[in-house]
Length: 478
Image 1 (cartoon, helix red, strand yellow):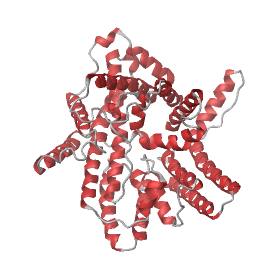
Image 2 (tube, helix red, strand yellow):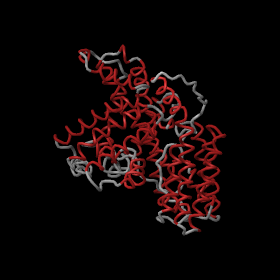
Image 3 (spheres, helix red, strand yellow):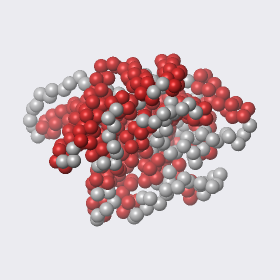
Image 4 (cartoon, one colour):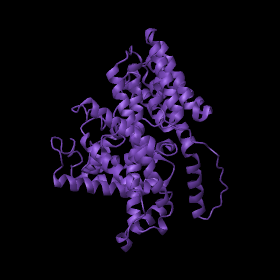
């Protein structure tokens, strides 16, 4: 079920009303409703894959219980690797089976051997990359004794399948989200109002920014060989806004929806395009995934300890694995490698943690030096995004080469003026609200109520007037 669909617009109020009607009953009633609602939400796409979520839930719940019962180090390690094997095994099969088969055949063909491949018509279950990482975090934290395992199967099922963040995150840690299913939730009007504001801003990001940009991005990338250099540059910039509006929009809707039910999810995007270097960008982009890799891969590898050579190795591994996590295509791996190349000079010079605070924190406008850094980081990010968006490495390379042409002086492909207006408006609101969890969290609170509500109605009208056909979210494919 899509957040931007009529189905969800009908589904959410029904679940919301039933959920709070159950508040007078034992907590278990609300948790059962959340599990049922989450399974309906996910099964709306393809009910057959509900068995995968249920299987992962049963496996990791059982392993967590057994980890609690034994203190034998050897048995605990076996249980941990059983969880890792099951979850990563499912992910590798559904997401990467054909990728490995095809590349295996290509490698042997290169050396003159002929192999008849056995490829399967595998449908990638939506959200499998997200909920497998979420359940893995639970098992690993229980194994490390950072978390006491739950013996309530309903609570654990609700944690794994919680529909606001099930399909595309944020990837919540069990240490943060699971305890919220164990405490009584009381309806909070202010929290619900805050959730509605975040949902509204997320819908604006998705329907107006991402989906309108997508129409032009698709045309430019699919016909890049015949496009002028100026159009290709425009396409790269529009894709940067498309993927940010699409993914952060999903996160905003998910986080806002969770708040309607009394839950607090982690911030997943912290205005990444206002970053002054690539290191800061990655601290602000897809935070739940970046911190997951940091805590469960980077630190176990040694993190920033040891020699500079080991630090470089660890960074390369993280970026390559992050790229591969996004999809079974070499373009994602190159995208990850390119970001590593941009990050490593900062690491080597010990400048990777220079910009830890928000830019121009107590100022209206940034210093011109910061502005130059922001623009430089954005340009580098756009170049990397070309690999992310392209079908093949060859397409990405040719796209970038064609950007360096005298036709850069020509007028780019014609775009509706209102898109430029929306983009300028979007950038301004994001800049004004960059100190907050999301752009319009408290931005208008200093103004009269009439002006605040006029702003909300304006955004709503824009969504209804300029929103087109319902489009899926980019990260559903990951």
